[in-house]
Length: 238
Image (tube, rainbow, N blue to C red; front, side, top):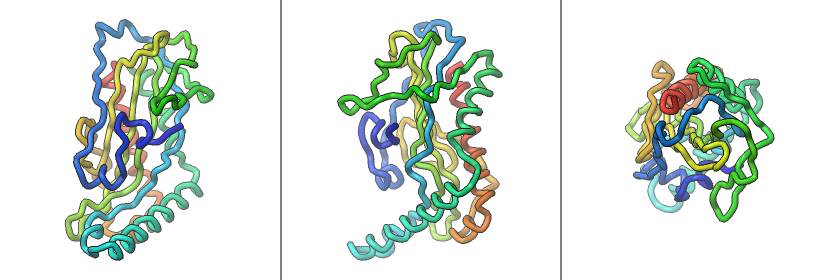
C-alpha cells in the first residue's frame, strides 16, 4: 500500500503540504449515476507511514542551510519519538478506522465487508483495482496521509492534532471511481479541495514535552479526529 504522496494525482512533499497551497482530488458522489449501493467491500487499511510532530514556527527562524538542517533534525527526532511511542502502544488507528466505517455505514443501512487481503496495486504510477473481484455494489479504498501534531507557526502556538484520510469509492464491477475526497481534521492545513473536519478541540499541547507526557491523551485526540472524519465521509456517501 502506498502513502498519500504516492497516491495523490500529483505527488506533493510534506513541507509543501504544510506550508503552501497544495491540492487534493474532490469528486462528489452522484447518486443518480452511481445507482443503489447497499453493500460495500472495504479494502485493506494500513497504518500511516507519515507520523509527524511539526512546529512550523521553527522552520524559518533559524535561517540558512545549517539552520534548516538543525530544524529538520529536531522535527525528525520528535516524529520518531512520537512514532516509537505509538508503535509500542495497543491502540492502532488502522484497526479502529475499519470499525468506525463499519459502524457508521451500518447505522445508515449499508453493510460493509472488510477484505484485508484485497488492496490496490500500483501500476504506471496510479492505483490499479482491476484484479479485485467482488459481488458487492461498491468498493471502498481508504488510506492515511500524515498523522500527528502541528503547531501552526505563530509564536507559542500549541500543538494541534492533525490527520489526513483519503476515501475513494468505486463501482463494484466496473471499478469506475464514483467518489474521491481527502479529509483533513484538527489542524487546518493549506490543502485545496480537501474537506476540513473540526475535531478534538479540547486537546492542545503547549510544548512537545507536554504532548508526550500525556501521550494517551494525544492518541485519544487522534482517535476523535478519525471518528469525526468517518462520520463526515459516510454522510457524504449516503
